[in-house]
Image 1 (tube, helix red, strand yellow):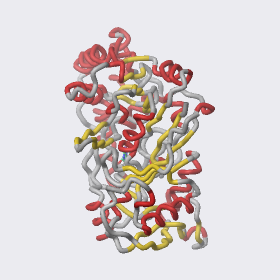
Image 2 (cartoon, protein in one colour):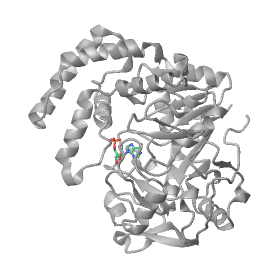
Image 3 (cartoon, protein in one colour):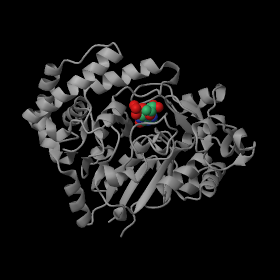
Image 4 (cartoon, protein in one colour):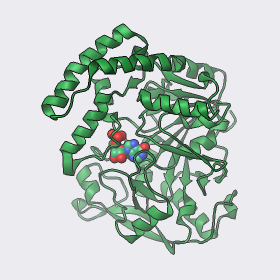
Length: 435
Ligand code: IMP
């Protein structure tokens, strides 16, 4: 049995969905443990594209049970929409393949309205959220007035919980943000309906997880967003509202740290970011434009163009430290084909530190904003990499690039993705080792 946590090593959009889909047939359980429908995973199987926001990316593998753990925030309309679409396509035939924790918190209309109202008010300092209500939903969770999935199944408790929230949320919306209140009665009726429709999926996911581990099954924990969007370890306040690091799998799914075997850090062969916040290796000119075009870098959730730049191993080393990576996966190596020169940032010059070089990710936002990357330059390669299935089949300079990343980060690169399709993957090692 092996438990593997797969997390993003950058600012999200590292291609976790594709790799989780590739890894899923090796696992019996795929578990989401944090975040919500701010995530967007694009999977391509046999040329057919599936975009998922809440349902774990293991769903396309018929042998996998997919858990939505208590650490996730669930927008019922989005979840039900995905379940309906998967059912219609014949992908989901049995509700027992998707289990939703009764303890997961629910994203309500108030949360989306407040998310948008706050961003509008923040103007120049806006975080650039996905507008899905994630932050406000987590706020209600930690201030202990949130509504959980199990509450949707109990109309009496639900009415009371909604009434309590309504007083406070509608006050904030109308009096502080001068926007429209949410109709409490209409929301209650919808919530009762959500409860009826979600009931076949609601479960005690910690028990299912524990049983699977006792039976010696492989379990894959699917991270969302990325290390530098983590509420504690990211570029605060330009972060999301949950912990995205590997350790969050323990709290967000309900598993002890002693039961995690491996941690796979997923990075692109370059770097992207959506929304506001510092990005030391960002290329704002033609180079960035070229990377965006070559990599089709537009958000799966919001369609926003992603900011693009070179690979940054200062970040990757930090990510390796806070997550405890046992291996790395490099995605979208094929996108760099055809570039004459490929750069890797190996250190920063931060003037506050006497203009000296540092190879450590700075602690404060001001230092990260001032960080000027120091690059090493690598020769590019040409040609279509998508048919390569073994490392040795890659052009020599592409092999050298991967080996250099491995040496600089100090973590072995186990998986390399050379195209969006499930098969367009090079495995140098089996991520789920036999016990
Ligand atoms: P929120 O999670 O919607 O509150 O957004 C906070 C920040 O995280 C914004 O910069 C978003 O663009 C970013 N973000 C949230 N989810 C994702 C994701 O799945 N991929 C990339 N960026 C994300």
